[in-house]
Figure 1: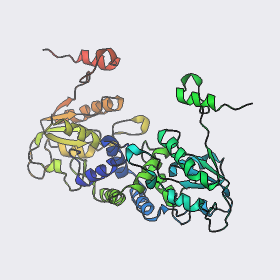
Figure 2 (figure 1 turned 90 degrees about the horizontal axis):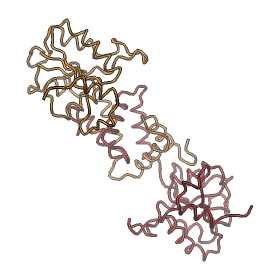
Figure 3 (figure 1 turned 45 degrees about the horizontal axis):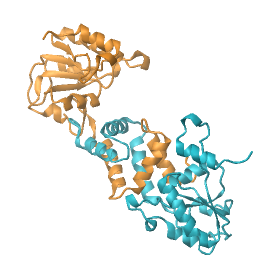
Figure 4 (figure 1 turned 90 degrees about the vertical axis):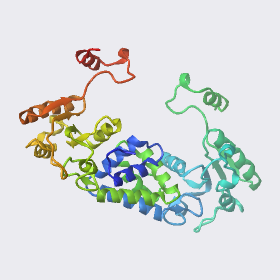
Length: 209
Length: 209
């Protein structure tokens, strides 16, 4: 409730406040910016919201976000069909893409197992995963090649680890190689300030030089 | 640039990133929230943006934001015409309103004098202020009463102080009483941690008990 603000401004602040991490003060600042911005910014913002919601869907193959089905990554003939990287969310997929270290395919679970939050296997996109891997073949429209390795890239936290364990048990019978992204000290990190669990993992997973 | 994101999502993130204090990571998080939100949130947000930009204007009397001219505060017959509070921005007006300590009228300057940023008197809403005070009368549609006191509530920083000084010189010839909001230690504050300038002001402006 903003004292002395006209109703349309109140409504705009109210809607902005529903965004994650945006309180009343920030919402008010954003609303003032939108009102004052020049060059048709407000219209461009409103249009981009409507367009994104209207056009962005889940890819029927990898369950990532896309405006064409299958998505660009699933359709790209240069990607390696033999590798499949499983991530919790679309933001994780983007983080992996940003590394430029991975040229395989993806599968987005849209969550991680969390009994406390009521997220069980049926809330994750596992049916789609099994459908892709069921016959050991990635269902690509263009070409079909056997998946050699599934990389489980869920987060290294309790839910992500539980999901990784679940996926291992689920996919083991399919006879595919399953790997987990490495855990250890972050690059540029400092032993002195590393948490116990991370340093412990780094020691256990040490590799010969 | 988000690797692996469909163009409409890229555009939405791009527009959100133009908002103040919103970087790529936050913009991406907000975009995902908007895409996933239920109950027609995205439409409500887009509509509220378009509606606010379409309907919110500056009040021709006090220069605050309004969807009807003059604004609700200028039209309110219960407000005291004898008091006029001058603030830098609409957010400041709202902050004063929130205190419930003030029942007079307002004038919004839309800035403060700042030679470094190229903001001189002609960039502020001073013409409107003079027009209101020129004959010592607040131009209200309903009733006209002389202004007895102008409260200068610009920020207690360099620009706000300079603006206050300028306003004093500008309004002195009009024969109206001019006051400045008090400066001192904030409520709940601590002498030990107060900055020098604030504590110095608090001492100089001490009042008898």
